[in-house]
Image (cartoon, rainbow, N blue to C red; front, side, top):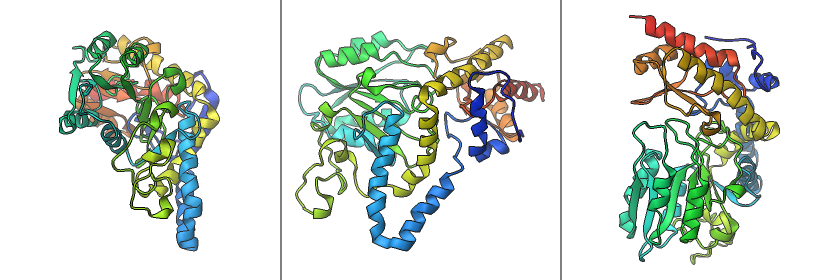
Length: 393
């Protein structure tokens, strides 16, 4: 296990190492699993205590603070992807949001297809596999055999006048490949289809600008590089699209006047119509410190720091003769590097046993993801530990 101060080894933005103390897990482990569960901020317990104190001391009156705080935190996470204020909503997870989005559209007409990719997160594919219940049809574009390449043109060619919605990841979760979304957005809008982008592996590590991207919907969660923990899914919808969407499970917080208790549905304007039922107040409180830390640093610096750690890691893995299933060009790669040194499940287990936290995906390899609070020493040191485990018999 690695503990105490860690040298930056001359990496870009080494001053960010001063923030290591804000993430307690770094004191006892070499934490390189930020693509799967970002490290908890030290102020998260304080914020949860603040939430609990409001409940304990004010009872039902706590809602006067809780409700606006959830909206403030939604705008805060929205700012990390360049979303204008008032266009981002928070819910429990992406599955909830994607499901509500699906049923907010009419799939009964001739324009009833969703175009997506076999390389998407399985949970999203599970949703689209059931779209036939609503009268829709899923067109799943196959992935490339190497698991790294993404033929955008194949997706573009699959989009036509029958397409109602296109769903695509900004970053592929297995390989950290950044998808060139511009041709997809252009073709979809040309034929009148909506574009939904899964930004789960992008938010918190890439400098995302949803306005420039041009997608109609950009959604994700906070478990990964955002370090906001579970229970904090979020979705941005552009102002010119959101009022055309009619979610079935709008919930009482999605109503125009939630405390009027009117049995007749009246959607709230804008993104709030996707607020659903009672919000996950403690989850929003828990996530705020990590969101604020990223906002204070700035996503441009976070991205530069990430590249300065992942590129030497990738090159050193290749020098050892190991397979790297992530793009070698840093401009095409997001926050993690997928490395297969051989016998990768055993190597992964050996890393975990030694206090080096990463994760493994069958058939792909070990995903290693340094974040802004990691050092270059840590990033490269994981390769030495892999070699040690490989040498054991």
